[in-house]
Length: 213
Length: 213
Image: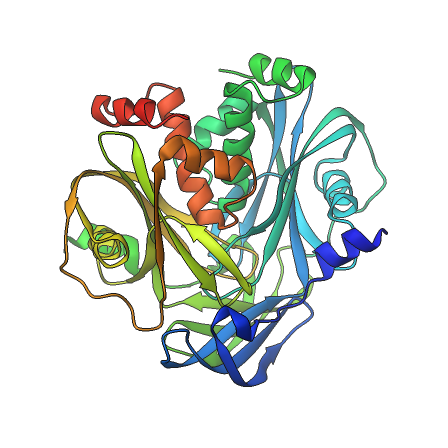
């Protein structure tokens, strides 16, 4: 891994005092393999004392918009424990902070929809999913030039359904409120924007055109 | 408040056993006025035991895309403690779960950019910002017919800058990665999609057209 990438993905939570917040103390309040809750006694830039609980993520979030030449994409359906409901999403997963997010994206594409891709276009880098209390950062890609792949076994707590559909139909599901996962809907909307603004590579733009419904 | 709305916004975290997860026990591990961390001993739909820490939010997230007749919008700049960096975002804030999200949206628009609006178009409802570990839900609106308003004082821990710019420039900031807040970028991209697809009210579409750069 390049040192540039390592710097990009490893950046720990480190509030800087020169940003106006003064940190008096910090304490770990909860710790799991996925998250840590850190509580800070701090003074806000306005001079007001504030206790700030931050959810520190141990993985990056990665997401993939797979797209075949006919404009078909793949949604993954699962019951999301945290929100207590079923959710249709793009292939997504966690990436160890010392790994290149694209390697995790490739693994998730293989694990969740049994595909590999010849081409990858970065779509989001260092996007903050919920910055009022968490430091979670997300990376996303469009993947095309797809073929079958059986390299990775499914996660043992996931029970996934796969739904192959035209990419335009997935965008419509965003518009209609049928996709509630913010990361998935942001990926679909950014790809759709780039297509409508004529900013996608020719091959991807043709697939997007073919996938309109 | 109507009972329909109350049902919509008050929905507590309540994983249903018929979704395949079996809950053996739960415990509060951390508690603040904003979040609670609940830990569940559960059995996944695949039969595998799993300890699941869920960040339960005590407020809904609300966001507003203000738009004047010339296509200008307003970004709010602030240092985000949780991610340790400066962030340009749409006016956003928290909404008590027993309040209609549009009331909070109106308050945030007034508090953060000193504006009120005659017209409100719902854009997102019940979007999950980070569903791998949190139950945070977001609501967003386009607001137009803007006028000055000094009804609400600013939050005492916030030090905000206001940046008035054409809406097309804000969308370009999303495309260029200069807006890292997922909620803000999703709002801008959805509004942009509706405009490009000819699905916005005529007055809003005209403003969007005027705000292209």
